[in-house]
Length: 172
Image (tube, rainbow, N blue to C red; front, side):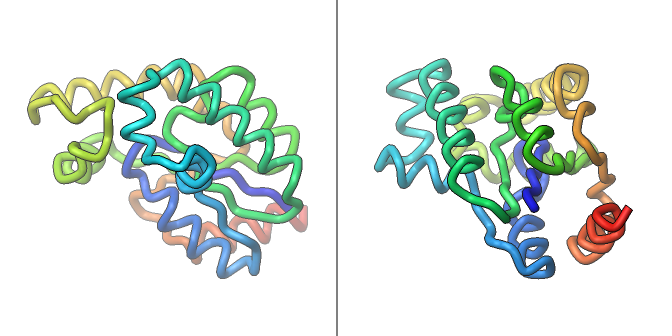
């Protein structure tokens, strides 16, 4: 079983993913941690020095590596992973893609405290951040997030509930 958690920055992919993997007795992989180990530097630094296009190439290759070399896992992707190249189709063909949908106001509040660690938003004022997040979520939902196998309102659903949903779905 392969489960891919997708969603916007600060939607809880890593936290929910760890809990979900524990409940389902699967390995947990955080794609961004995997990439940092692979490139031997922080994503922030790589992104700032190499650029977005090069980072997305590394991200896509890393996703393919993980899919090819691991059988059972819960993978927390980055916010852009499902939208680059054919990543969404690749993940859907190899497992279940779960979009953790979170209200944009909640995401903005979470991101206000994490701006310095995220290259895309590090220089934005709070008002700019609100507009940026809303626009990107709308764009990404249309382009990729809404194509997930399962869409879960992560504002109200816990990791335990997600695990129950996935166990039930797997038996169908």
